[in-house]
Image (cartoon, rainbow, N blue to C red; front, side):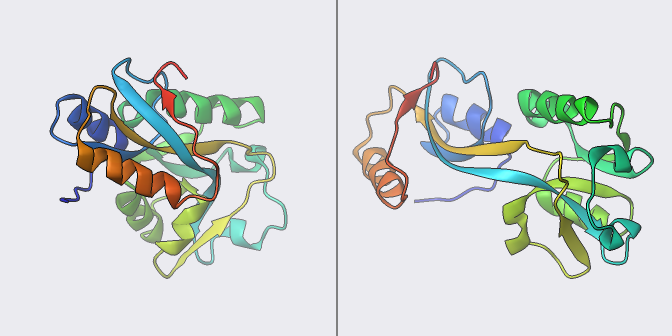
Length: 184
């Protein structure tokens, strides 16, 4: 088994071109017709801010409170559907045009930019396990978006090693396995 670190969109490309047998990818809807996927987790979005930032002293943060804040955002090409979902959720609750001062491709770059006080950023709640010192994760009461995570593979890949891997991944999850094709 060889592991590679790739953003979700690159994992999809690698699986479709047979460079990877499987990947752990954030939801990329609509899924490509040749992909199968199984959702194993869903993660709530929270705000990453540098320690001592004025938001860390606020009791309840709402999206409208973030209107003047500089944001680090992810590139739309990384996950267009999720990007649009996040922008839509912000707009519906009073943050119609987040002030994006920097875009980044991956979580570590985003966290580094937050740590350097370039801006605040949306990250998944599980980022707490990867958060460097000096960053605080804050819930935003009216941000209800969750990012689904899936194991993905090419539908016609019948590799016994892949099948064993999928069985182990699905068997290790407390949620009953629910295999899905790209159409749902």
